Length: 528
Image (cartoon, rainbow, N blue to C red; front, side):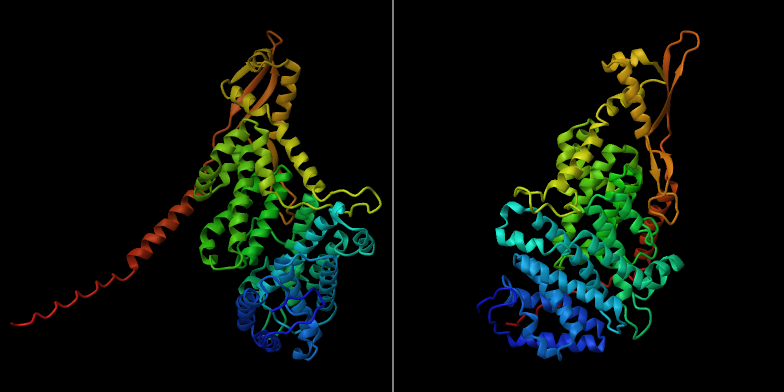
Protein backbone atom coordinates (compact mmCIF):
# COMPACT_ATOMS: atom_id res chain seq x y z
CA UNK A 1 0.00 0.00 0.00
CA UNK A 2 1.54 3.26 -1.09
CA UNK A 3 2.03 6.11 1.36
CA UNK A 4 1.40 9.74 0.66
CA UNK A 5 2.83 13.11 1.52
CA UNK A 6 1.23 15.55 3.96
CA UNK A 7 -2.08 16.83 2.64
CA UNK A 8 -1.39 15.56 -0.85
CA UNK A 9 -1.22 12.32 -2.78
CA UNK A 10 -4.17 10.03 -3.40
CA UNK A 11 -4.69 7.42 -0.75
CA UNK A 12 -7.17 4.60 -0.35
CA UNK A 13 -8.44 4.55 3.22
CA UNK A 14 -8.83 0.97 4.52
CA UNK A 15 -12.40 0.06 5.51
CA UNK A 16 -11.36 -0.77 9.07
CA UNK A 17 -9.92 2.73 9.43
CA UNK A 18 -13.17 4.25 8.14
CA UNK A 19 -15.03 2.09 10.65
CA UNK A 20 -12.74 3.31 13.45
CA UNK A 21 -13.42 6.95 12.57
CA UNK A 22 -17.20 6.43 12.42
CA UNK A 23 -17.30 4.57 15.75
CA UNK A 24 -15.10 7.15 17.45
CA UNK A 25 -17.32 9.93 16.14
CA UNK A 26 -20.49 8.25 17.44
CA UNK A 27 -18.95 7.45 20.83
CA UNK A 28 -17.89 11.08 21.25
CA UNK A 29 -21.39 12.27 20.36
CA UNK A 30 -22.82 9.79 22.88
CA UNK A 31 -20.20 10.72 25.54
CA UNK A 32 -19.25 7.09 25.99
CA UNK A 33 -16.01 7.67 27.90
CA UNK A 34 -14.94 4.00 28.35
CA UNK A 35 -15.27 3.31 24.60
CA UNK A 36 -13.58 6.58 23.63
CA UNK A 37 -10.66 5.81 25.92
CA UNK A 38 -10.32 2.26 24.59
CA UNK A 39 -10.35 3.46 20.99
CA UNK A 40 -7.92 6.28 21.77
CA UNK A 41 -5.41 4.26 23.82
CA UNK A 42 -5.67 0.84 22.16
CA UNK A 43 -7.35 0.80 18.76
CA UNK A 44 -5.62 3.91 17.39
CA UNK A 45 -2.19 2.51 18.24
CA UNK A 46 -2.99 -0.92 16.78
CA UNK A 47 -4.23 0.58 13.54
CA UNK A 48 -1.20 2.85 13.39
CA UNK A 49 1.16 -0.12 13.75
CA UNK A 50 -0.73 -2.14 11.16
CA UNK A 51 -1.44 0.41 8.43
CA UNK A 52 0.58 3.55 9.11
CA UNK A 53 3.87 2.45 10.64
CA UNK A 54 5.94 4.84 8.51
CA UNK A 55 3.24 6.95 6.87
CA UNK A 56 0.66 9.47 8.11
CA UNK A 57 -2.98 8.66 8.68
CA UNK A 58 -5.45 9.71 5.98
CA UNK A 59 -5.85 13.50 5.77
CA UNK A 60 -8.97 15.00 7.27
CA UNK A 61 -10.47 15.48 3.79
CA UNK A 62 -10.63 11.69 3.44
CA UNK A 63 -12.82 11.23 6.51
CA UNK A 64 -14.80 14.48 6.65
CA UNK A 65 -17.89 13.03 4.93
CA UNK A 66 -17.90 10.05 7.30
CA UNK A 67 -18.52 12.35 10.28
CA UNK A 68 -21.06 14.72 8.72
CA UNK A 69 -18.39 17.39 8.36
CA UNK A 70 -18.39 17.95 12.14
CA UNK A 71 -15.89 20.78 12.75
CA UNK A 72 -14.89 19.86 16.30
CA UNK A 73 -14.43 16.18 15.51
CA UNK A 74 -12.30 17.07 12.48
CA UNK A 75 -10.09 19.21 14.71
CA UNK A 76 -9.79 16.33 17.19
CA UNK A 77 -8.97 13.92 14.37
CA UNK A 78 -6.25 16.23 13.09
CA UNK A 79 -4.82 16.53 16.61
CA UNK A 80 -4.32 12.74 16.57
CA UNK A 81 -3.17 12.87 12.94
CA UNK A 82 -0.37 15.35 13.62
CA UNK A 83 0.71 13.61 16.81
CA UNK A 84 1.14 10.39 14.82
CA UNK A 85 2.94 12.34 12.09
CA UNK A 86 5.48 13.73 14.57
CA UNK A 87 6.04 10.26 16.05
CA UNK A 88 6.43 8.27 12.83
CA UNK A 89 7.36 10.74 10.07
CA UNK A 90 9.73 13.71 10.16
CA UNK A 91 7.43 16.74 9.81
CA UNK A 92 8.38 19.47 7.37
CA UNK A 93 7.71 23.18 7.88
CA UNK A 94 4.32 22.94 6.17
CA UNK A 95 3.16 20.20 8.55
CA UNK A 96 4.44 22.11 11.58
CA UNK A 97 2.51 25.21 10.55
CA UNK A 98 -0.64 23.18 9.85
CA UNK A 99 -0.44 21.50 13.27
CA UNK A 100 -0.04 24.90 14.96
CA UNK A 101 -3.12 26.21 13.14
CA UNK A 102 -5.09 23.13 14.15
CA UNK A 103 -4.20 23.49 17.85
CA UNK A 104 -4.99 27.19 17.74
CA UNK A 105 -8.40 26.49 16.15
CA UNK A 106 -9.19 23.58 18.48
CA UNK A 107 -8.34 25.47 21.67
CA UNK A 108 -10.03 28.58 20.28
CA UNK A 109 -13.32 26.71 19.82
CA UNK A 110 -13.10 25.24 23.32
CA UNK A 111 -12.32 28.63 24.89
CA UNK A 112 -14.90 30.69 23.02
CA UNK A 113 -17.84 28.26 22.71
CA UNK A 114 -19.83 26.27 25.23
CA UNK A 115 -19.36 22.58 24.55
CA UNK A 116 -21.06 19.53 26.02
CA UNK A 117 -18.39 17.15 24.72
CA UNK A 118 -16.69 14.80 27.17
CA UNK A 119 -13.27 13.23 26.62
CA UNK A 120 -11.00 10.97 28.70
CA UNK A 121 -8.65 12.94 30.92
CA UNK A 122 -5.64 11.10 29.48
CA UNK A 123 -6.46 12.44 25.99
CA UNK A 124 -6.82 15.98 27.35
CA UNK A 125 -3.43 15.69 29.08
CA UNK A 126 -1.88 14.35 25.88
CA UNK A 127 -3.19 17.40 24.01
CA UNK A 128 -1.34 19.78 26.34
CA UNK A 129 1.73 17.55 26.44
CA UNK A 130 1.92 17.26 22.64
CA UNK A 131 1.18 20.97 22.18
CA UNK A 132 4.26 21.86 24.22
CA UNK A 133 6.36 19.11 22.65
CA UNK A 134 5.62 20.48 19.17
CA UNK A 135 6.45 24.01 20.36
CA UNK A 136 9.77 22.67 21.66
CA UNK A 137 10.38 20.74 18.44
CA UNK A 138 9.71 23.81 16.29
CA UNK A 139 12.10 25.95 18.35
CA UNK A 140 14.89 23.40 17.82
CA UNK A 141 13.97 23.03 14.12
CA UNK A 142 14.02 26.80 13.66
CA UNK A 143 17.47 27.06 15.26
CA UNK A 144 19.14 24.83 12.64
CA UNK A 145 19.50 27.58 10.05
CA UNK A 146 22.54 26.02 8.40
CA UNK A 147 20.34 23.17 7.13
CA UNK A 148 17.64 25.47 5.73
CA UNK A 149 17.28 26.22 2.02
CA UNK A 150 16.62 29.75 0.79
CA UNK A 151 12.96 28.82 0.22
CA UNK A 152 12.61 27.51 3.80
CA UNK A 153 14.21 30.65 5.21
CA UNK A 154 11.75 32.76 3.25
CA UNK A 155 8.88 30.59 4.50
CA UNK A 156 10.10 30.99 8.09
CA UNK A 157 9.90 34.77 7.70
CA UNK A 158 6.16 34.39 7.31
CA UNK A 159 5.88 32.26 10.47
CA UNK A 160 6.83 34.83 13.09
CA UNK A 161 3.85 33.91 15.29
CA UNK A 162 3.81 30.18 14.53
CA UNK A 163 4.79 28.30 17.71
CA UNK A 164 6.12 31.54 19.23
CA UNK A 165 6.75 31.44 22.97
CA UNK A 166 4.39 34.32 23.67
CA UNK A 167 1.55 32.78 21.63
CA UNK A 168 1.98 29.39 23.35
CA UNK A 169 1.96 30.98 26.82
CA UNK A 170 -1.09 33.08 25.91
CA UNK A 171 -3.07 30.02 24.81
CA UNK A 172 -2.18 28.05 27.95
CA UNK A 173 -3.05 31.02 30.17
CA UNK A 174 -6.34 31.54 28.33
CA UNK A 175 -7.28 27.90 29.01
CA UNK A 176 -6.47 28.39 32.70
CA UNK A 177 -8.42 31.64 32.95
CA UNK A 178 -11.49 30.53 30.98
CA UNK A 179 -11.78 27.22 32.85
CA UNK A 180 -11.87 28.92 36.27
CA UNK A 181 -9.67 26.11 37.57
CA UNK A 182 -7.56 28.40 39.77
CA UNK A 183 -10.59 29.53 41.79
CA UNK A 184 -11.82 25.95 42.13
CA UNK A 185 -8.46 24.71 43.39
CA UNK A 186 -8.18 27.57 45.87
CA UNK A 187 -11.55 26.55 47.30
CA UNK A 188 -11.04 22.85 48.01
CA UNK A 189 -7.46 22.10 46.86
CA UNK A 190 -8.82 19.84 44.10
CA UNK A 191 -10.84 17.48 46.32
CA UNK A 192 -13.96 17.57 44.13
CA UNK A 193 -11.93 17.28 40.94
CA UNK A 194 -10.13 14.23 42.32
CA UNK A 195 -13.29 12.58 43.63
CA UNK A 196 -15.23 12.99 40.37
CA UNK A 197 -12.35 12.05 38.01
CA UNK A 198 -12.57 15.49 36.46
CA UNK A 199 -16.31 15.39 35.68
CA UNK A 200 -18.33 18.09 37.44
CA UNK A 201 -21.74 16.52 36.91
CA UNK A 202 -23.35 13.92 34.63
CA UNK A 203 -23.76 15.32 31.15
CA UNK A 204 -21.55 18.35 31.74
CA UNK A 205 -18.37 18.77 29.71
CA UNK A 206 -15.02 18.14 31.39
CA UNK A 207 -12.97 19.37 28.45
CA UNK A 208 -12.29 23.02 29.29
CA UNK A 209 -11.99 22.29 33.01
CA UNK A 210 -9.32 19.60 32.58
CA UNK A 211 -7.47 21.45 29.81
CA UNK A 212 -7.21 24.39 32.23
CA UNK A 213 -5.92 22.09 34.97
CA UNK A 214 -3.28 20.49 32.76
CA UNK A 215 -2.32 23.90 31.34
CA UNK A 216 -0.98 24.79 34.79
CA UNK A 217 1.57 22.01 34.34
CA UNK A 218 2.08 23.20 30.77
CA UNK A 219 2.88 26.74 31.92
CA UNK A 220 5.45 25.39 34.38
CA UNK A 221 7.05 23.33 31.62
CA UNK A 222 7.28 26.16 29.07
CA UNK A 223 8.80 28.54 31.62
CA UNK A 224 11.40 25.94 32.60
CA UNK A 225 12.25 25.26 28.94
CA UNK A 226 13.13 28.93 28.45
CA UNK A 227 15.04 29.11 31.75
CA UNK A 228 12.46 31.13 33.74
CA UNK A 229 12.33 28.93 36.83
CA UNK A 230 10.77 31.47 39.18
CA UNK A 231 8.06 32.26 36.62
CA UNK A 232 7.31 28.57 36.16
CA UNK A 233 6.74 27.98 39.86
CA UNK A 234 4.63 31.15 40.03
CA UNK A 235 2.44 29.99 37.14
CA UNK A 236 1.88 26.69 38.97
CA UNK A 237 0.62 28.39 42.14
CA UNK A 238 -2.95 26.99 42.04
CA UNK A 239 -1.29 23.56 42.39
CA UNK A 240 1.02 22.69 45.26
CA UNK A 241 3.94 20.31 44.84
CA UNK A 242 3.91 19.59 48.57
CA UNK A 243 0.21 19.03 49.30
CA UNK A 244 -0.56 15.93 47.28
CA UNK A 245 -3.73 14.54 48.90
CA UNK A 246 -6.02 15.55 46.00
CA UNK A 247 -3.46 15.91 43.23
CA UNK A 248 -5.28 14.74 40.10
CA UNK A 249 -2.06 14.24 38.14
CA UNK A 250 -1.43 11.14 40.27
CA UNK A 251 -4.09 9.41 38.13
CA UNK A 252 -2.17 10.07 34.90
CA UNK A 253 1.44 8.98 35.10
CA UNK A 254 2.72 11.26 32.33
CA UNK A 255 1.17 14.35 33.91
CA UNK A 256 2.48 13.40 37.35
CA UNK A 257 6.02 12.93 36.06
CA UNK A 258 5.93 16.23 34.16
CA UNK A 259 4.65 18.15 37.19
CA UNK A 260 7.36 16.94 39.53
CA UNK A 261 10.21 16.67 37.01
CA UNK A 262 9.92 20.31 35.92
CA UNK A 263 8.95 21.54 39.39
CA UNK A 264 11.88 19.82 41.10
CA UNK A 265 14.26 20.94 38.35
CA UNK A 266 13.13 24.55 38.84
CA UNK A 267 13.79 24.30 42.58
CA UNK A 268 17.21 22.76 41.93
CA UNK A 269 18.23 25.58 39.57
CA UNK A 270 17.03 28.14 42.15
CA UNK A 271 19.33 26.51 44.75
CA UNK A 272 16.36 25.30 46.79
CA UNK A 273 17.86 21.84 47.10
CA UNK A 274 15.77 20.59 50.02
CA UNK A 275 12.54 21.45 48.21
CA UNK A 276 13.90 19.82 45.04
CA UNK A 277 14.77 16.64 46.94
CA UNK A 278 11.28 16.48 48.47
CA UNK A 279 9.73 16.77 45.00
CA UNK A 280 12.00 14.15 43.45
CA UNK A 281 11.34 11.84 46.39
CA UNK A 282 7.56 12.20 46.00
CA UNK A 283 7.47 11.27 42.32
CA UNK A 284 10.14 8.55 42.51
CA UNK A 285 8.31 6.89 45.41
CA UNK A 286 5.10 7.09 43.38
CA UNK A 287 6.76 5.52 40.34
CA UNK A 288 8.22 2.70 42.45
CA UNK A 289 4.64 1.80 43.37
CA UNK A 290 2.88 2.19 40.01
CA UNK A 291 5.31 1.66 37.15
CA UNK A 292 4.67 -2.09 37.11
CA UNK A 293 1.08 -1.34 36.06
CA UNK A 294 2.27 0.55 32.97
CA UNK A 295 4.50 -2.15 31.49
CA UNK A 296 2.14 -2.66 28.54
CA UNK A 297 1.63 1.05 28.00
CA UNK A 298 3.04 2.72 24.90
CA UNK A 299 4.62 5.27 27.26
CA UNK A 300 6.44 2.71 29.43
CA UNK A 301 9.86 3.36 27.89
CA UNK A 302 9.40 7.10 28.39
CA UNK A 303 8.38 6.52 32.02
CA UNK A 304 11.56 4.51 32.63
CA UNK A 305 13.71 7.15 30.95
CA UNK A 306 12.26 9.97 33.04
CA UNK A 307 12.67 7.81 36.15
CA UNK A 308 16.41 7.44 35.42
CA UNK A 309 16.78 11.14 34.62
CA UNK A 310 15.19 12.14 37.92
CA UNK A 311 17.54 9.87 39.85
CA UNK A 312 20.44 11.62 38.07
CA UNK A 313 19.08 15.03 39.05
CA UNK A 314 18.50 13.82 42.60
CA UNK A 315 22.16 12.72 42.71
CA UNK A 316 23.20 16.27 41.74
CA UNK A 317 20.88 17.72 44.38
CA UNK A 318 22.27 15.52 47.16
CA UNK A 319 25.85 16.22 46.09
CA UNK A 320 25.30 19.97 46.26
CA UNK A 321 23.33 19.76 49.50
CA UNK A 322 24.04 16.52 51.45
CA UNK A 323 21.43 17.39 54.08
CA UNK A 324 18.75 17.04 51.37
CA UNK A 325 19.20 13.27 51.64
CA UNK A 326 17.28 13.36 54.93
CA UNK A 327 14.08 14.01 52.91
CA UNK A 328 14.36 10.71 51.01
CA UNK A 329 12.43 7.53 51.72
CA UNK A 330 14.48 4.42 52.38
CA UNK A 331 13.64 2.87 49.00
CA UNK A 332 14.56 6.01 47.05
CA UNK A 333 17.75 6.55 49.05
CA UNK A 334 18.73 2.91 48.50
CA UNK A 335 18.22 3.09 44.74
CA UNK A 336 20.10 6.38 44.61
CA UNK A 337 23.10 4.78 46.34
CA UNK A 338 22.89 1.79 44.03
CA UNK A 339 22.81 3.90 40.87
CA UNK A 340 24.96 6.92 41.67
CA UNK A 341 26.98 6.50 44.87
CA UNK A 342 30.26 6.77 42.93
CA UNK A 343 29.09 9.83 40.97
CA UNK A 344 27.81 11.54 44.14
CA UNK A 345 31.20 10.99 45.83
CA UNK A 346 32.96 12.55 42.84
CA UNK A 347 30.63 15.53 42.75
CA UNK A 348 31.04 16.09 46.50
CA UNK A 349 34.77 16.31 45.82
CA UNK A 350 34.04 18.94 43.14
CA UNK A 351 34.51 16.87 39.96
CA UNK A 352 33.13 19.10 37.15
CA UNK A 353 32.97 16.23 34.62
CA UNK A 354 30.45 14.33 36.74
CA UNK A 355 28.25 17.42 37.13
CA UNK A 356 28.44 18.03 33.36
CA UNK A 357 27.63 14.41 32.50
CA UNK A 358 24.58 14.04 34.74
CA UNK A 359 23.18 17.49 34.00
CA UNK A 360 23.51 16.97 30.23
CA UNK A 361 21.82 13.57 30.47
CA UNK A 362 18.93 14.60 32.71
CA UNK A 363 18.12 18.26 31.97
CA UNK A 364 15.16 19.35 29.79
CA UNK A 365 15.71 20.23 26.12
CA UNK A 366 15.92 23.97 26.58
CA UNK A 367 14.74 26.32 23.86
CA UNK A 368 15.38 29.96 23.08
CA UNK A 369 12.43 32.18 23.93
CA UNK A 370 13.06 34.35 20.85
CA UNK A 371 13.63 33.12 17.27
CA UNK A 372 17.11 33.39 15.73
CA UNK A 373 17.89 36.15 13.25
CA UNK A 374 17.08 35.16 9.68
CA UNK A 375 19.34 37.85 8.26
CA UNK A 376 22.61 36.87 9.91
CA UNK A 377 25.02 34.13 8.83
CA UNK A 378 23.49 30.66 8.69
CA UNK A 379 24.40 28.56 11.70
CA UNK A 380 23.05 26.18 14.30
CA UNK A 381 21.66 27.97 17.36
CA UNK A 382 19.42 25.12 18.51
CA UNK A 383 21.83 24.21 21.34
CA UNK A 384 22.52 27.77 22.51
CA UNK A 385 19.81 27.71 25.19
CA UNK A 386 21.12 24.38 26.54
CA UNK A 387 24.71 25.68 26.63
CA UNK A 388 23.60 28.80 28.50
CA UNK A 389 21.82 26.79 31.21
CA UNK A 390 24.72 24.31 31.44
CA UNK A 391 27.18 27.20 31.86
CA UNK A 392 25.07 28.74 34.63
CA UNK A 393 24.75 25.42 36.42
CA UNK A 394 28.46 24.55 36.19
CA UNK A 395 29.32 28.04 37.41
CA UNK A 396 27.26 27.37 40.52
CA UNK A 397 28.87 23.94 40.96
CA UNK A 398 32.39 25.39 40.55
CA UNK A 399 31.65 28.02 43.19
CA UNK A 400 31.41 25.16 45.68
CA UNK A 401 34.57 23.26 44.67
CA UNK A 402 36.59 24.34 47.72
CA UNK A 403 33.74 23.94 50.17
CA UNK A 404 33.77 20.14 50.77
CA UNK A 405 37.44 20.17 51.85
CA UNK A 406 36.89 23.28 53.97
CA UNK A 407 33.92 21.64 55.63
CA UNK A 408 35.91 18.48 56.41
CA UNK A 409 38.54 20.53 58.24
CA UNK A 410 35.93 22.52 60.13
CA UNK A 411 34.33 19.31 61.38
CA UNK A 412 37.64 18.42 63.07
CA UNK A 413 37.60 21.46 65.33
CA UNK A 414 35.34 23.27 67.75
CA UNK A 415 37.48 26.35 67.18
CA UNK A 416 40.46 27.03 64.94
CA UNK A 417 42.38 30.17 64.09
CA UNK A 418 42.06 31.60 60.58
CA UNK A 419 45.86 31.50 59.93
CA UNK A 420 46.07 27.84 61.00
CA UNK A 421 43.09 26.84 58.88
CA UNK A 422 44.52 28.74 55.91
CA UNK A 423 47.84 26.91 56.25
CA UNK A 424 46.07 23.53 56.42
CA UNK A 425 44.17 24.35 53.23
CA UNK A 426 47.26 25.90 51.64
CA UNK A 427 45.44 29.12 50.73
CA UNK A 428 45.87 32.76 51.63
CA UNK A 429 43.85 33.99 54.65
CA UNK A 430 41.98 36.45 52.40
CA UNK A 431 40.84 33.61 50.11
CA UNK A 432 39.89 31.55 53.16
CA UNK A 433 37.65 34.36 54.42
CA UNK A 434 35.99 34.47 51.01
CA UNK A 435 35.42 30.70 51.10
CA UNK A 436 34.06 30.88 54.64
CA UNK A 437 31.59 33.56 53.55
CA UNK A 438 30.62 31.42 50.56
CA UNK A 439 30.06 28.39 52.82
CA UNK A 440 27.79 30.44 55.08
CA UNK A 441 25.83 31.54 52.01
CA UNK A 442 25.57 28.03 50.56
CA UNK A 443 24.60 26.51 53.92
CA UNK A 444 21.24 28.27 53.92
CA UNK A 445 18.46 28.22 51.38
CA UNK A 446 14.78 28.95 51.07
CA UNK A 447 12.45 26.15 52.09
CA UNK A 448 8.73 26.04 51.27
CA UNK A 449 6.81 27.52 54.20
CA UNK A 450 3.39 25.97 53.64
CA UNK A 451 1.91 28.95 51.82
CA UNK A 452 -0.06 29.05 48.58
CA UNK A 453 2.91 30.49 46.67
CA UNK A 454 5.35 27.85 45.38
CA UNK A 455 8.12 30.46 45.30
CA UNK A 456 7.70 31.60 48.91
CA UNK A 457 9.77 30.16 51.70
CA UNK A 458 11.74 30.73 54.86
CA UNK A 459 15.51 30.84 55.03
CA UNK A 460 16.60 27.61 56.70
CA UNK A 461 19.87 25.86 57.41
CA UNK A 462 20.76 23.42 54.66
CA UNK A 463 24.04 22.20 56.13
CA UNK A 464 25.11 20.03 59.04
CA UNK A 465 27.28 22.63 60.83
CA UNK A 466 27.20 26.24 61.87
CA UNK A 467 30.15 28.51 62.50
CA UNK A 468 31.02 32.11 63.08
CA UNK A 469 34.19 34.15 62.86
CA UNK A 470 35.17 35.81 66.12
CA UNK A 471 38.27 37.49 67.57
CA UNK A 472 40.22 36.24 70.58
CA UNK A 473 40.37 39.36 72.75
CA UNK A 474 43.54 38.23 74.48
CA UNK A 475 45.61 37.64 71.33
CA UNK A 476 43.65 39.48 68.64
CA UNK A 477 43.63 36.32 66.48
CA UNK A 478 40.65 35.59 64.28
CA UNK A 479 38.95 32.35 65.29
CA UNK A 480 36.41 30.19 63.52
CA UNK A 481 33.96 28.87 66.14
CA UNK A 482 32.24 25.68 64.90
CA UNK A 483 28.98 24.11 66.08
CA UNK A 484 27.98 20.77 64.60
CA UNK A 485 24.23 20.46 64.24
CA UNK A 486 22.55 17.25 65.44
CA UNK A 487 21.01 15.17 62.69
CA UNK A 488 17.27 15.65 62.55
CA UNK A 489 15.29 12.61 63.58
CA UNK A 490 12.26 12.13 61.38
CA UNK A 491 10.07 10.28 63.85
CA UNK A 492 6.95 10.79 61.72
CA UNK A 493 8.50 9.01 58.74
CA UNK A 494 9.70 6.23 61.01
CA UNK A 495 6.21 5.74 62.46
CA UNK A 496 4.52 5.87 59.05
CA UNK A 497 6.80 3.17 57.66
CA UNK A 498 6.24 0.87 60.63
CA UNK A 499 2.47 1.44 60.64
CA UNK A 500 2.42 0.44 56.97
CA UNK A 501 4.42 -2.71 57.72
CA UNK A 502 2.08 -3.52 60.62
CA UNK A 503 -0.96 -3.13 58.34
CA UNK A 504 0.60 -5.51 55.81
CA UNK A 505 1.14 -8.09 58.56
CA UNK A 506 -2.47 -7.72 59.73
CA UNK A 507 -3.76 -8.17 56.17
CA UNK A 508 -1.68 -11.32 55.77
CA UNK A 509 -2.97 -12.71 59.06
CA UNK A 510 -6.60 -11.97 58.17
CA UNK A 511 -6.40 -13.69 54.80
CA UNK A 512 -8.18 -17.06 54.77
CA UNK A 513 -5.78 -19.98 54.80
CA UNK A 514 -4.98 -21.38 51.42
CA UNK A 515 -6.67 -24.69 50.74
CA UNK A 516 -4.17 -27.35 49.77
CA UNK A 517 -5.00 -28.99 46.45
CA UNK A 518 -6.35 -32.50 46.71
CA UNK A 519 -3.82 -35.24 46.11
CA UNK A 520 -4.27 -36.89 42.72
CA UNK A 521 -5.95 -40.27 42.85
CA UNK A 522 -3.66 -43.26 42.58
CA UNK A 523 -3.74 -44.80 39.14
CA UNK A 524 -5.76 -47.98 38.88
CA UNK A 525 -3.72 -51.14 38.75
CA UNK A 526 -4.79 -53.76 36.31
CA UNK A 527 -5.37 -57.19 37.85
CA UNK A 528 -3.54 -59.86 36.02
